[in-house]
Amino acid sequence: WLAGPRETPDWQALTTGHQAGDYGGFNLVLGEMNGRDWVWLSNRPGHTDSGGDPLPVNSGWHGRRLRPGVYGLSNAGLDTPWPKTRQLKAATALALDLLGHTAPEASERWRHTLLDALLDRRLALDTELPRTGIPHEREKQLSSPFVHMPDAGYGTRSSLIARWHAPAKGGQLELEEWTHAPGLAPASDAGSADNASSSSVISMPSIRAGIDGIIWLKSIIWLLPSCRECALSSPPSS
Image 1 (cartoon, helix red, strand yellow):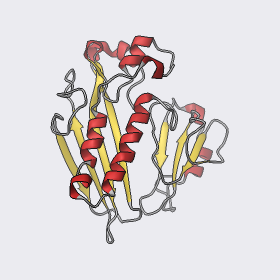
Image 2 (tube, helix red, strand yellow):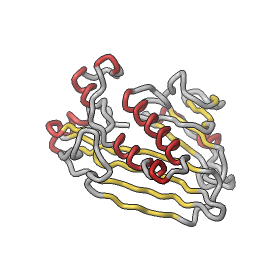
Image 3 (cartoon, one colour):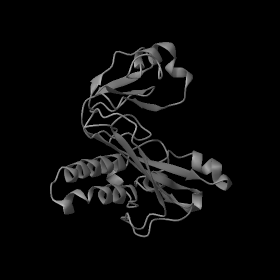
């Protein structure tokens, strides 16, 4: 279904050929850079207010066709309004707006806007916390985009910004990743692109152009073996 004859990944073949209940909870986004056919699939329901049109999928599956826009995907369903999900969606929308400015000083701030949001350690207010079934204090510790729980051996391990460029001839996928040492937090609560521990940029110029641009944010959680059980008892960051 992923490498078949169709240019776009065949989500129908995936959902008819596999039982959703055979897998643990997951989110899957499928699309193709040459077109605008993007879908979200899961074996857990998305938020009722999420964008996109529902897909006709078999029982146990959930899916939506993603129209152009800004979406948030955490360890819950599509656009579930966790505080950090709403925060990162807002930062992405602002970055896209900055990229549209002609003034150089505005267009150059998009990257700092995104990374500052990814490195933000500020916890959500108690009134904003979701109810996922874990203790209140643990829920609060996990509410920031950058999770920092060294006493539990748990926290954000890396941050990624992926940007798709679509010039007139040939596209380019730019991946920029920052790796964070276990137990160490960003230099400031709000974070800074200059204070991230390390970074690398990978360009893939062979990808063909198709759409005007995509920005993707990702945080990865680190887990220390000395506290595997306590870390696995909590949902990781978005």
